Image (cartoon, rainbow, N blue to C red; front, side, top):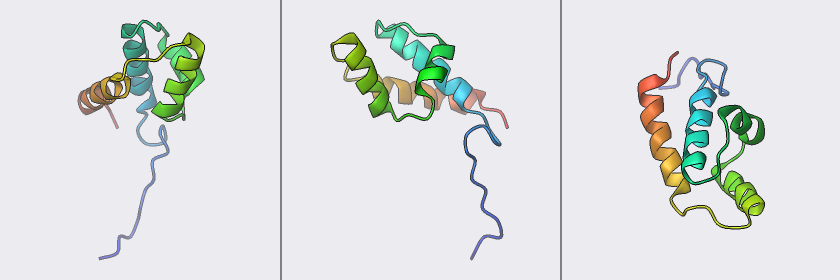
Amino acid sequence: MTPDLVVFDFDGVLVDSEIISNAVLAAVLTALDYPLSEAECRRRFTGLKMEAIREMIEAERGRALSPHFEGMARDESYRRLGSELKM
């Protein structure tokens, strides 16, 4: 069966998950001793992949982030998106 309509949500069009994602990123980075605000995360990292974010932060810090960084952010994002995301 061919669908009559396909909708692509370019984050923020129908559902704005960036607010939650940046809050999670700020919380995880702060927990990993790299404190940033949600606004700073939004300004610096919106649209970037986690790998690029890791590379930027590690270059600034001059040392590696926890190997659990991506997993921590992913797990908390899924948890919060599941409970807080509104359409």
